[in-house]
Image (cartoon, rainbow, N blue to C red):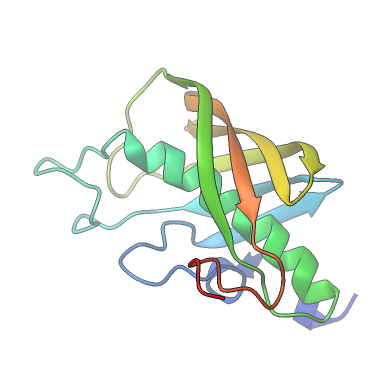
Length: 152
């Protein structure tokens, strides 16, 4: 494998999100519809409260962006620009812990299935080997050449 495709790799090259909404820093590993990302949100992160505690919506976004990073990596290997997708549903989200700006967060995702332009994924967010959130989501994968904004 060339250096261009070596892991770990910065998520910035794999997902469309930019600061301050890019929460995933690095794609650490990927294989067979699964992947693991790493994130360390700064104290001034958009989703961090006054005392640095991360808003619970952060966990949803970490799972979604982690899937985007895995999918973007596959697109990169296939020689195409990373595709776009939109989160369209959340199921069984469980928040079981807290996280703070500066914490090293690992997000693991697994693709459960794909059908007619959609993907169903499961993800967990962990801090210090403790799961702080888990859930499943449905993502709409925008067809190449479409903008996803409803424009013809």
